[in-house]
Every structure is written in C-alpha cells, then in structure tokens.
Amino acid sequence: MTIEQPPLRNDCFAMPPGVDWTPVDVALETLRAGLSPVVGVETVALDAAMGRVLAEDVVARRSHPPAANSAVDGYGMALGSLGQPPHTLPLVEGRSAAGEAYEGYVPAGHAIRILTGALIPKGVDAVVLEEDCAITDTHISFSAGLKPGANVRPAGEDIGKGDEVARPGRVLSVGDVATFASVGVNAVALRKPLHVGVLSTGDELVEPGSTDNPARTYDANRPMLLSLIRAWGYVPVDLGHVADDRNDLRARLDGARVDAILTSGGASAGDEDHVSALLGEVGTRSVWRIAMKPGRPLALGLWNGVPVFGLPGNPVAAFVCSLIFARPSLSVLAGAAWVAPRAYTLPAAFRKRKKPGRREYLRARLTQDGAVEVFPSEGSGRVSGLAWADGLVELPDEAVDINPGDPVRYLPFRDFGL
Image (cartoon, rainbow, N blue to C red; front, top):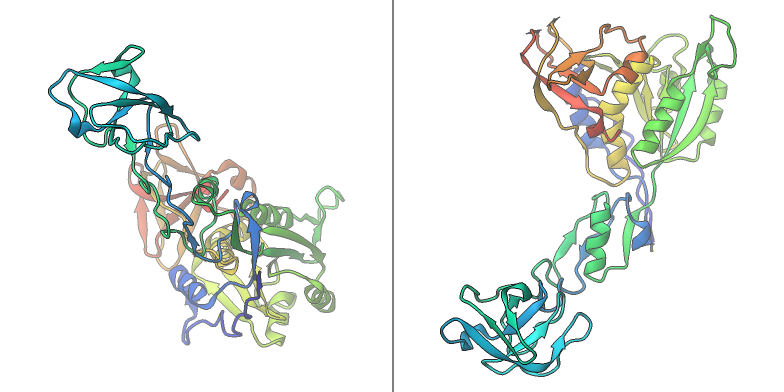
C-alpha cells in the first residue's frame, strides 16, 4: 500500500502581520501550525519497522496472553474445593506444559502438574508454586495462604483483542516491535523515510583540509548537519557546496530530489544572501528575525513544493537553530509528533547578567555534583564549545541575573536525539 501526501500550503511559513523581532515561542507556534507530513505511506514487515514512523492505528489481532496460563512451575487445582489446611491432593495423570495443553478436566479436590506458560486446564483456578509443596509420585501437600487466581495470568491480562496498541505518529521502538508481534501483527503501515538535503553556501567555504589559505573557511556546517539528520533517523542527502552564485544555487535546488532542505549561509538580506533572495523570487519566502542568541536570521520557504530551512552560516548558530527549530519541524514533516526537548531545572555553576529582549542558549555541561557550568566564551565562532558541551542552558526572554546555585533550565543534547 502506498499513499502520497498533499503538498504544503504556500503560506506555511507566514508570520503574523506586525511581527518584527520574532520571539522563539511565536516562531515555534507558527512552524507547528503550518507544517504537516510530506512523505507517503508504505507497508513494511515488522522486523524492519524499528525507528520508523507509524502511519496507521495498530489494533491487536488477538489477546495477549490469548488464554489463561500459568506464571510459574507448580500444581493447579480448584481452590474452592479445598478444605482446611494443610491440603493434600491426589495428582491426575498427565500435565499441562507450554505448547502441550491438558485436554481433560481436573476434578475438584485433585491437582495437576503445570509448567510456566502452560494453558490453565478446565477445573483449575489457582496454581501453587512447586517450591511450596511436599511432593510424592501420587500426591502433593501444601499449607495455607494460596489465594484465588494465584499465579494465573488471565487471558488478555496485557492486551485484549481489538485493543488499540499504537497510534499514528509514533516512532517505533524495539518494545513496540515486540508488542505488535505478541498480538499477531506482522506488518505495519509506516511513513516513507524523510530524505533531507543539506547544502552549504558561500564563496569562502572549502572542504576541510583542502587548503591552508587563511582566507578560506573549512565547511563545518555540512558534515555537522548531515550528522544531525542521520542521528534523528532521517536519510541525509549531501547537496554539496555552492559558491555565491545565484544561478548555480538555483540549479542545485532544482536538482535536489529530497523531502526537505537545510541550507547554511545566505539566510539574511545582504547582497550575497542568495538563499533568501531565491526563495523570494518564487514568492514563498519568509525571513524571520528570531529574538534569540545565537542564530537570529532564518529564511524559510518552499522550493518547488519542498520546504527549505535557511539556517545561519555560523556553525554554532546553525547548530542551535537546528535543535530548536529544524528538529521539531522535520519530525512533523516525517509524519511523527512535534518534539520539544525536555528541560531539567538544575543549579547554576556560573554567573551571568542577561539583558531583556531575546532568548539565549549557552553551551553547557553537567558538573560532577549535578550543577550546570557554561562554556567560558559565548562567542558563536567558538565551534569547540559544541564538543565541550553536553547540552544547552536556556535563559528566558526577559532580563535575569544568574548566580551560582540559582535554578536554570538545562536541555541535554540526548533529549534532542543526539
């Protein structure tokens, strides 16, 4: 089964009128409201489903367990037929084992040998542990304390036939695969993998290690963004590097066979900001000036129906904007839920006086005593801070003075899927 998705609306990135410097929360709300899945649906065998996005409801084809069974190795009997303890019961011939159900009826006042996972025979409503019994070839004996239903897993105890097991938009885990299999599901309808192109722009960029010319900058963004895409479970597509030539950029975008594109550089409004200019030519550009540090300019639009996220050229800004804006957006485009990072309130191990007007994200990491320290420099050119950090500290839009021990919001990289 294959289902294609309708294209995004041309105004999916339109900012509300009158917005100049866009608060982070407004930008996120606008993205969330304007985006929808862009990939179709296909049916995939269950053993290939992990990490993929579920496209349709999964309903249990049978109960789990499908019938009442024993949770232990022991002896089954009808508890209501017993007299006063201690109880001594004759054993019926045969046993009930996993895969070898006892077909007869266990009479009142009798017991039957039963093994873990075996179906509960007719006439049995409780199972006593083997370790709690005195056993001969013909009888068992045990003392008081057994309760109705003891050591019996009822049919459907976990999942009932017809129950909804999972809903569309879920990214499937190993546990989901096991659960689906347990209720008879062997194939599922999934979103096709999201292919995300990554393109670097700028005359100054060269491949890492290709020259020692100090006038040239090694392209850190493209390998970084391709790695992010891969870490998030999408298919990264390297669209390469384009110099500041509008015709070359147009040709590269026209030739991209992807579901979404991340570009870095050229997202502002300068003479060489060709990403922004080209998106404007096709009439779907929206340049957002985000009230945040690092990473103010975002150029967003559709190119031949493909959503384009024009990220800042600075690697630190491109990284932070990818985590905050691109990650939840790509999740929706892939057919999954909007994903917001979890924030943890932890004590600061730093001092910071912040002015009002924009949100700030500081490269940070945990100390051994559970506090959060920040990278010594806030300069967005210090790429090494990304390797030093294991998360971000998020400071609010308003002014704030942070002293050691004050609570701060810490966003670990692992909760961004890294």
